[in-house]
Length: 498
Image 1 (cartoon, rainbow, N blue to C red):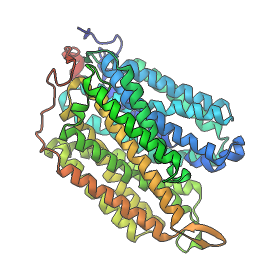
Image 2 (cartoon, rainbow, N blue to C red):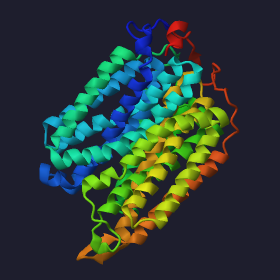
Image 3 (cartoon, rainbow, N blue to C red):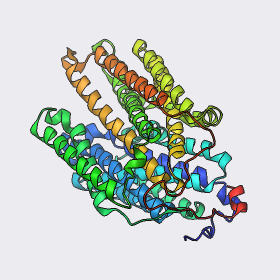
Image 4 (tube, rainbow, N blue to C red):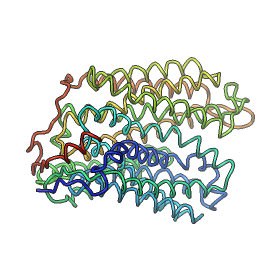
């Protein structure tokens, strides 16, 4: 039995306990900002570091890979050994990675630092799990709505902030700033956030973890590098083939081990599986909005449709969407509370589809481009808020972090697929304008149609989900091999003031 006593200096003090959600949400936004921090810097990396353009691209790719691998793994570790403990470790890794990037211009060191930053993506599902464990029931939905939305909010805010820093300061400044924010997060979590008393039994699944890492790295490398290597090239097809083989062996092992890193039986339940499919499609649709907006407005006027905007202006086009996501997360929680998170996710998919319809017909005016991008962001906010609520209704309490880690992973896979599709379309549907090869307007419109199709597919997956039964969550012991350790919650006084 695990002790249920609150950590000294945290939940025992009401003033501090009220700050748990704001602190966790701030941590989530800092981590999300790290994911897009280097995007405005990428075109300049070769001249700043002497590295090739291909090596510079790894500053984004390696973050995606480590985030994909460590998010579900650290979620499981948090369920077993303490979510606050793993949250602190993740933030420490983020801070170390930022410091490495801040002190060096060597591409190898930068890639290592970015790999460490990516591993911290697990902060978001860990934060969701802590919220579920520590807050009274009436505050859980709005709080997890905010926490889940930080993934989109941080991405939308990070691009313009990074663009401003890149244009006006030494590029190392943004890494110093991220290191300082990571350190601040560490101190705030140590001071404010309690350790969850809920644990799951079992031993850590080392072989399963290694198999999952090999599977994810193989698939994501093939997706992210396929356009450069060639989709029918030996490396791409070899990686995909090896990933299928590893996946089959890994799945067989996970089904027969008593304490798997990922409970495939739980993940195969329609309520969990369809939610994760919807998460992948929503992640795809959301990321198209971020990728295309910045590039579209920067296209030169010689193309006949481009606006010739600066890097800073292109980043600022996403800022209203980020602010809208902050404002709308409470609305999503109200929809989920009143009508169920399935309804909220369906509404989100419809809004995102309508946003791309607006974008399809209004790609010549800066303000209308911003309006369309903001509508898509509004739908994303509602979707990202509803997804963890759906997950929590379908999994045992002791698996909240690992299950939300898998859901966050599926969003990341969707973003990786989107990046590959956008790159392929913009590289192939081109024409010569002003003496240079540029994507045609039809290339951008095609991307809008594909992203709208992904949102509609997410709507179909959502409608196939089992009907909502408000107030019911999967909390039975024994829902997974090894059972759970359900420890009494912290004192009622502490919970009531959370």
